[in-house]
Image (cartoon, rainbow, N blue to C red):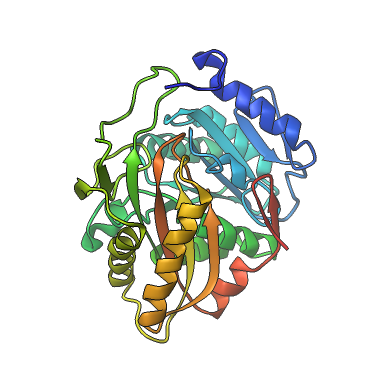
Length: 333
């Protein structure tokens, strides 16, 4: 697999350098560790700080959502690897404006372990933290075990809503409650068409035949719930959307936000095919799309495939999604 890289071992540090050079008015490094990025005006006095973190390879997740009205900082791990607890603590200290810090990240074992360690370390520094885990991947666990689900593209909705709540001056408990509410009303499911190639090995993370697809695959190549012959865009959308609607219990008269997300190597045209059919399905069920996003929001290097996320809306959730925000990879005016 051909890649535009230099040395595999310097891949993460070099693309982080590129991001910083491209967006100097939006991001900064608060100390010596260039795996810790914060918004350019951090810390904001009196405002709840929000930090996220996780492995590299998922741009714009996680580091792409640091900015006004979103997250305040990010701790960056190697490709598909967790950041260290020391990096998380440094990020925490850099965004703490005196109102506490929310940890908002995906539900993966290594991340949970290191963020939990950082929680204890932050307490010793006199910084109060709360944690909300993204857990929107409906294929990873059944509904009765929803707290064990993986966090995937739908965490974007939580970044957006919690960031808006923090920006308007909500307390740490209130911002955490907003994030939790969004997570509880979000469902995501994906389809994979080809594997990702890890820069350090040059080898695929899993095997998938040319004429196959895998429904429910994870963003690190975790096994899905169905592997079979490649189907049409409409058929794929039907598989995903029907499962999401059922999981959320959405019915006629409800409103949703829709996120059609590319996993890294899927043309935008194909994402719009999925959105087209998603719109038709929801319209047929009497479910209105009040907000939509189509593009790459949580990728897996060059994996071909896509995911669809639905967020069940009320007036408050919609208002938070529509609040102003700006980061290197997202803007809402």
